Image (cartoon, protein in one colour):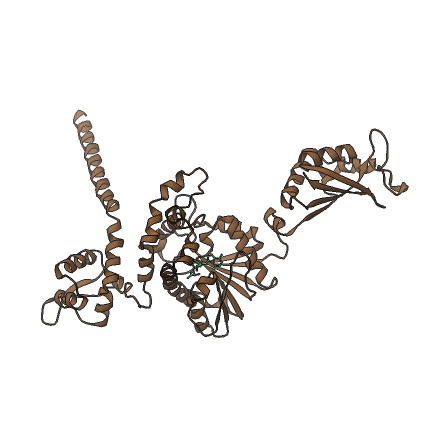
Length: 495
Ligand code: SAH
């Protein structure tokens, strides 16, 4: 018995030691995690993949170092590191000497390659983008999370920085274009049907126009409007079937049959996404227009996955992307299906579908609602007045104060007003509608009984009771006019 216990204790100790060794080994990987990014960047800058691709046979170290003008012993060490990670491979030349060749991974580092990811890596590893990572903890510990990591490093947000630095803007646009080539070829292969019957597409935040160029090449009936900030649109290369338009998507989105947004909405907060999507909804036909969104969809809670991506290997990218948004943008984030449903619904899209394709992004197609949600956001941007007829008498004083407060917040504080059409009953036992111009209508207490029978806490109110709820909801002035109906007109003005 004792022997068994000792045995168990020993096993537990051994397990603990083993775990601790594994933890240390893993931590070393994190400590030096940056070396992979840094060495791959070095390989791209040296042009190793480009040279090996040009020469279709194994290249010796000597040939390679001469061709690239490099110190051969350092180049050897760089290659040894990369080969260890599946980037490049060592094999035999015809004469039996050792030489280097490409692998599928190293082909992605060819600068002008079809599926190249070199530009993306050069952008993410640029000193400008790396600087914001040093301010991540400062952002998290700032009280209201308002200190953007990028702004703390550079004094302006990522878009203003790009506007002021054309070289950096070019790096950014090239990075996005290289991802666009990968994502758009997946859409063309996996769901070409989504472009049937679409004659004009506006690509909102379309960057240098690569997305539309590829879509127009594949679906030549499409007219493309590539829409981005003026400093991006003005230098975008010419592409057949595509016009470039420069403006701010928070102000205006050009009209088209469909609006397309790829890797734009994840740069912004929910409120900002609702504003952008509302502008897109207004730009498309209300009966058959669509908004097509390409974004990653992450899992709920701690699931470290891209929800539903067809490619299992991509499932690890979602939460990394979310960290990138945190470091590089002011309020951007990756979203779960629920979070996407929320912003779409608030922007007036009552239906959307999600399709998963073989890349990091999924395809969300959103359809405008025939009846717009009466959300605070929509009302705020449109209304100066509210008109209420026979609404408030259905509710208790407390509930009326809540409703009226929401209305007050939704209207301009200087010249907005709330117009209420309700009966006004007399004080005490007077069975009248106070002040109605029509003598025959003075029997208001019947209505009060109806409220008692049909609603939970509704009632008809005297002028004093109306003054109370209005005052409590922040309206310090109101007028009452009597008209030839059961209701009087109460006009209330924000304090
Ligand atoms: N959709 C492209 C580029 C995504 S990067 C792609 O996936 O390849 C985000 C883009 O949004 C950038 O090109 C940036 O210039 C643009 N953008 C940022 N703020 C904008 C604004 N207010 N109005 C229009 N475009 C904007």
